Image (cartoon, rainbow, N blue to C red):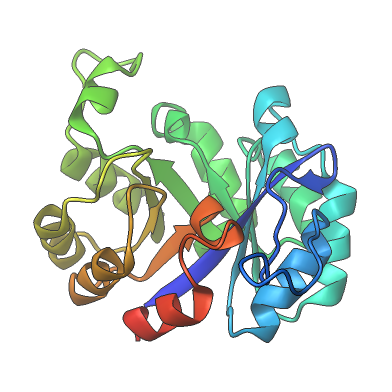
Length: 233
């Protein structure tokens, strides 16, 4: 299972300062996304996830220069979320150096637009879903009744989506449910966020999850990246 460092970028800088030697007072803190990504790749990361915080608010990518700087310093795939909902937005992201994108759950109700996005990104497009039942039920769907997560995932796979990112917020992932979902859905499943520790990483690995996307826990040092990689192996 991949352990994917995630960097929240706002006004060209990382929202969280990365200081790998903070506990011992060694090393150099940085809020430069390109340097943070380079550090994680040097430590073994095989994919970097970036959240364009400004882009998410604007509905279009806005931190493209920062994406370009990251892409120029790392030789691993670069996945971008935030403001990706639209084929032209994806083209801008790819031109800047991103190689994968994540669009929001809203695209499940905009299937023509989703097809256009898939025509640009193909298998390198993922759809982000909130797996918490109360969140799915409360979402303003343009359909007679809210879908279940399994039905929603099945719809997206039938449309050609091959990757799903399940964002748990502050909740702890339901490992038994995720294991069943991984068995039944014909798509790679990534888990983002949630209350996660090394035992949870091992559980996600055993549930056949393709990857876990971690931001603040890795950047703050709450979870050691090397130990996370070991737990995921």
